[in-house]
Length: 74
Image (tube, rainbow, N blue to C red; front, side, top):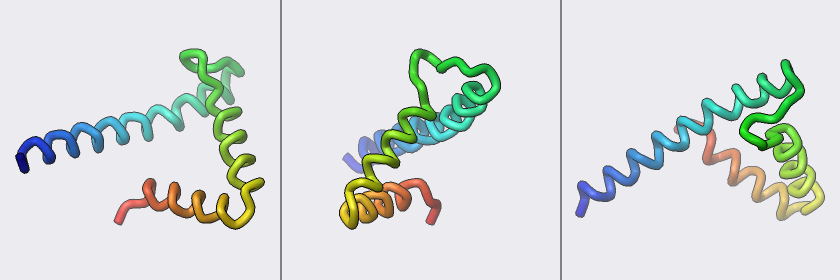
């Protein structure tokens, strides 16, 4: 059972690493060409997410800190 959890954890970690590499590339692509990548406007989505969190007041700030903690290495 421990082996299964290690495999799933490794898969999820690799998948997150892949997406963390794709996001900056898609932002750069949008800045250079002005077109979206795979039909997704990453800049508009990030702007919308941050707008939603900042309009949430204190709870939005707490959620933003929690989300940021996922992306920092320990």
